[in-house]
Every structure is written in structure tokens, then in C-alpha cells.
Length: 119
Length: 106
Picture 1 (cartoon, rainbow over the protein chains, first blue to last red):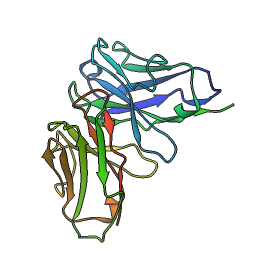
Picture 2: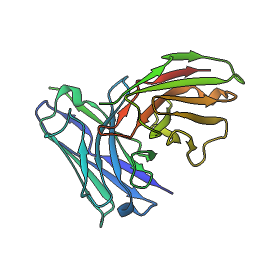
Picture 3: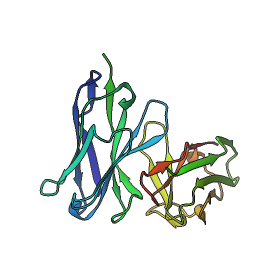
């Protein structure tokens, strides 16, 4: 059974940092691209970042580029999102999701981890 | 950025009726469009990918059509559990974008 489990969310002050993790199981992690998507309270879905199966290709939304860094450790079946210089508007539930093949059609999602940005 | 516009914003129908949800892309996205269902407190669930392909385990009452700029998600005979917000998403170009969602009330 495919499972994705996010962790690392919590309360952080504006300007602070947080590292989210996503633990994957039930599939060959190193064969699939992974995407981060967030959803602010009562809002729609917003794409955040993409990383290819090897980690050699990464993409970011303009709203987070230069502040967020996505990485993966295929030996540990782990995905990470390092978030720096956090802003109020980064407050959201963050989901990691597996793509079909190398694509960004997202067939399995984690349950999400909540990031709150507040002083 | 590619803008996806979903209509209507809210759709209220009865069990057994047919639902038609629209997603318009500007500019076009070929067939690189997916549909997701999200219920309160849950992660989104993939229904349709590449415009017409049903994802694993999705009931046959869900179908997708369209290409280029105009796409449709059809639910042929509504069940009460189909109440949810439905999002379209394109993967034709970076950045990936989502529509604003259609709320379906049964």
C-alpha cells in the first residue's frame, strides 16, 4: 500500500524556518517524482514545488523560490522541504504527493502537515 | 502562468442526476489536465488524469473529456458521497496551476 506521511509542521514566527519531511512507503520511491502542494485555511490548492525521481530537476512556485528548497534521500525514502524566511502567507497545510511516472498528475497524497506562521 | 477557470463555483443537484463541471485553460494545455476531488478534512484524490484517463479505483460514473482550452468532468449519476470540492490542475507548463474549485452539493 502506497503511503506518504508528512511531518515537521508547527508554529513558527515570521522570518523563521521549518523543515518538512515526507516519509514514503509501498512503492519504489526512487522511480517517482514528488510534488509539494499547500492549502491555506479555507482556500484552494496551490502548487509549491516539484522534484524529479533522481532529484536532478527541481521546480518552484514564484511565491517560494529563493526561500524554499526541496530535496530527497532515495536511500531513506524521504523527501524534504526546507522553508526559510517564512511569511504570514505561507501558513497552510502542506501535502506531499506522488506523481504518475515522471509526471505531476498526483495519484497519492499524504494527509498533510499544518504550518502556522504567527508572532 | 496558465490560468484555469472553473465553473460553476457551486453546483447543487440531487442524487441520480448528472453533474457537468467545466475547466477552461488559458492558454491551452493540450490534454495535460487532471481532476481531483477533495472532501472536508481530507487530502485531494485524483479522479482523472491526462483529460480522459480514470485513476485507479475511481468509479466509472466519473469521466473526463476535452483538450486544448476546454475540459469537462462529468459525474453520470450522483451519489450522496460525491459532495465535495472538485479541482482541475494542469501540468503542461511550469508552474503547475490549479483551478479555484467547484463545490458540488448533493
